[in-house]
Image (tube, rainbow, N blue to C red):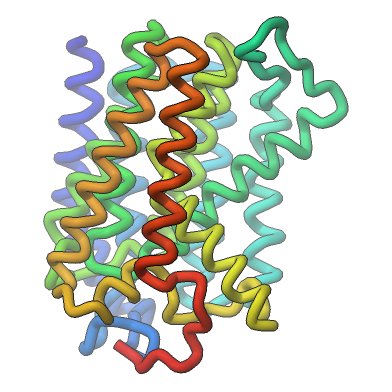
Length: 342
């Protein structure tokens, strides 16, 4: 347990100490976020906060574990997605260019033999993915990378949700004796939490795509590592449920934009946090409500690993029903073009 504590504390401390310097660097490079009709903040806020998160994570990993081929692959892929985020925060890359970069970063994992080769069939034998292992892994990593990126719309939201998801996966990893996954998620939780002090409303700095894509990528990649040494279905279901909030929000965004004839990658003001703001909640209230939802989903994810198949199915059905009710109640499936800017 000491190594987990060290990983968490080092990540938290380095990120906390590095963030003010990153803020000054972002201003010097012109990586700032200006308010517009879709955004909540009213002043110019520096981006690139993900650099501090990355620094904390790398320092923590190097201080906690010895480098292996697998770990080098994870850190190389994480660095690739970080560099893509830096370029996007400075130059605002086109969506297609960013997607191509995400695929390249995800492909780095494959070069180091980090991929999802099989899934556990809860009703019997294992399911070997064979030729589908590579596309399935790419889809998994790129999807989670984008999902966390899309939810980064309010002060402290992505950092808090990432912390909760990382802690959830950490608890699963400890229970399954997946020590490397546990160390990495402890480091991710510490990094995200160390940054949250500066990012919670009113934010002094944003993590930007540099941070949101890095956190999403690493949560996805660490989960893939977990599939190698445990029941792969458990290793994937836990992060899926723990990250149920950004997954649901992304799914609703895709459905909303498709049904209204809008480009899938075109930003709008129809995300869940926008709808809750429009319902009269303050920014802090919305974030705290979504934290609570994430905690409940995290608890549900852990419970899923401990119950029988029939009970797990009932829990999943209940979660899906709750998600459908929330989507209807908040109107996240409706056209957002008529909603006024924040």
